[in-house]
Amino acid sequence: MISTDLAKLYADRPKATLGRVATAVIVVALLVWSAAGIESSGAKADSGWTIVGSILNGLTHPAPQLLFNLTTTGVPYLLVETVAIAFMGTVVGAVIAVPLAFLAASNLMPKPVAWLASFAIMAIRTVPVFVYGIMFVRVTGPGAFAGLMTMSLCSVGMVSKMFIEAIEDLDRGVLESLSAMGLNRWQQIRFGVLPQMMASFLSTAIYRFDMNLRDATILGLVGAGGIGAPLIFAMNAYRWNEAASILWGLIVLILLVEYGSTKLRNKLARG
Image (tube, rainbow, N blue to C red; front, side, top):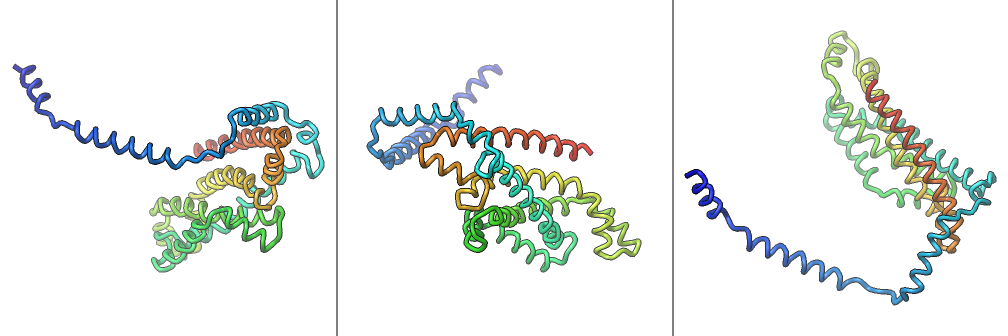
């Protein structure tokens, strides 16, 4: 009896065949329409495979004269410069982000002040990193200082947002206890908020440093210092062995930084 009822319910189930067919037709139509917009440059397959072979050969045979060159044009110096830009940009951005985050925290500041600070942070986060890089290169000239200023300003937006979330999730009981003791707002932040937030702030700054290290590599393309400019020059000139030297150096650097930052964040999270 039960099996008969189940069979009847299954037979009477809502049919979705029409919807599935319509969805499939729409997907196929979109794929056909997208494929129709693909244009070929007319390059021959043989020349394409030749270029691929040149790239692979260059990547597997990096230029040692660039990889182990300790002058200002060598990979070690350029990597150190890139790390310095990312690190100092993170430090400056985090320092600026701390007061902005407290001003934008709705549980600590009046709503008009918090709204204005949040609007300023949102405006900073809206502008892409490339636009900031081009602006600072025009103002300060090409070089590492332009990259530092770009990284600092880009860090402010993201770090401030993370700081605000941490501040708004803090234990209100501590603030109420300090307020009952007669402490003013600054003293409450100094003795009640900062001790709770320090580990979270440091973890966010380390995470932002990881991001800045990759962004600092890209910023070299607009002349803001770092290793990006030599990389794009080598690729444009089809010097794949030099590009390989830079890429291998970047891979090793990012692996080391990723390993160290993960260890630090885990240590901060566990106390």
